[in-house]
Structures are given as C-alpha cells and as structure tokens.
Image (cartoon, rainbow, N blue to C red; front, side):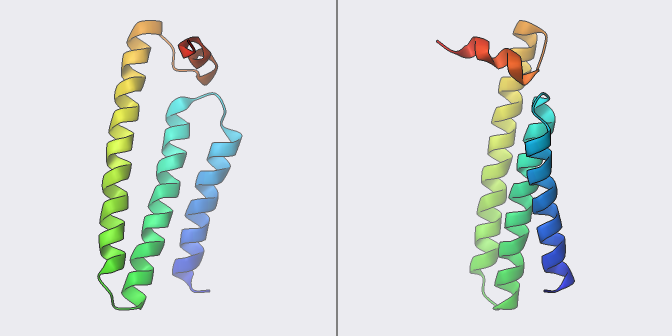
Length: 98
C-alpha cells in the first residue's frame, strides 16, 4: 500500500470512529459522515488517476456535489430545529416521531 492509500484509510477510519464514538452532538456526526465521503471520493480520484481515466474524476465530482447538497440540507434542518427547540442534542430528536 502506498502512502496515499494509508491516508485514505486513515481518513475513513477517523470518520467511522467519530461516528461510533460521538452519539450526542449532531454537528460532529455530520462532520464524521462528510469525512467518510471525502475519503471515498479521494479513493475514486486516485484510482482514476492511476488508470489514466476520466471516470474517477467524474465520480468524485458527483460524490462531492451530493455531499455538499446533503450537508447544506442537513445544516438547514439543524438550524430550523435549533430555532424551534433551542438544542441540537441527538436524543432530543425523538420528539420528531409522529
């Protein structure tokens, strides 16, 4: 394995660890998911560069676009919920059940 693959594995492991350890703060959970998205996009980018193809770059652009849209939507919902309830602790989101 090269140092790039170790970096990608470290980023993905860091995101997974942050997702598993953090169960209360929603912002840190979203940041951990985004770190995992970044690691997978970086892996596709490096795979495409290694095979000299454009598909890896296109898939990376698509993943980053979807991740940005997901992050913007999640933060908008988070801000609206904070204005309503005054907290962003994950345990308080059980109030959203119907």
